[in-house]
Image (cartoon, rainbow, N blue to C red; front, top):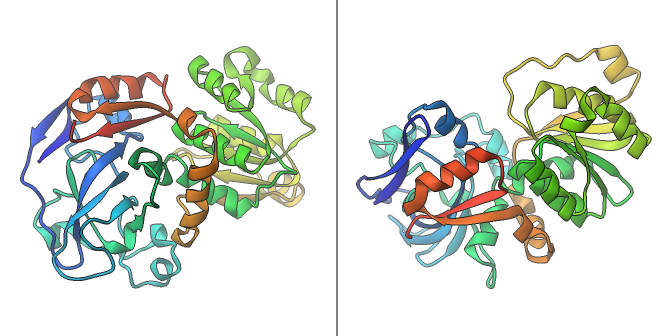
Length: 337
């Protein structure tokens, strides 16, 4: 099969590797759509990466033994893995599993883990059915395009009475706008990239340009709203995380879904106790709620605003250049084109 790899600084290519084989519970999925996520960071930095991607929508094409999925099933392949036995996996919160299987020990290789490829191996636990009439492109948004913000908004109980601040308007932030507008919440969206701000405005958000607001961004938010009810950081930037805390009213809710390894300064008394904030860290969503996210995919008029490019994987260099430009929503690869 062919798969995408990063071979150097701002250089990507396709390579041929052996097709993975189904083994035990692991089934073979033909990837029809592979959404791009944060892999552009390795592309821009020149970090070689031979196993790209963690999101996919495709078709089950081979199984080793009978199980809950069958050849011909159209499925969304959820990110990462789970043991399938612990309380978190059983409850649908597999993303927090602490007992991931040793994929290399089972399959004697890492091949089959990367979704920017023509085939992947997945546990049935992480394969959810695509309803009839839903395209692979749209269904693939049930992973990182819509998944992180959906999980966060579920935990925050975002509703039509709320004003929500969204910081960071990459694909995940734009996906958050899809959910917030679907729930009829008012959206204030903050970023510094003109393309993203324009797309967010087209999706119904009130936008604030960091380049124009500068140090006065908090005042701009307060001019627009007397303090937001909820805030969601999708950027992973400490300044944006801090803005979410400062802009949220007393007894409000804040969630972080943007990955960050930097330290966020929080003062427990003024930020948490006296302000009464509830702060959530959220990664994905409970798979029992998959029908609800599929409802958003089927009914929201903004899904095609979230997907900005659909590109053959044969043009992987171009796809990475677009992804790294930040002038895009969700970029979808077609591995067989």
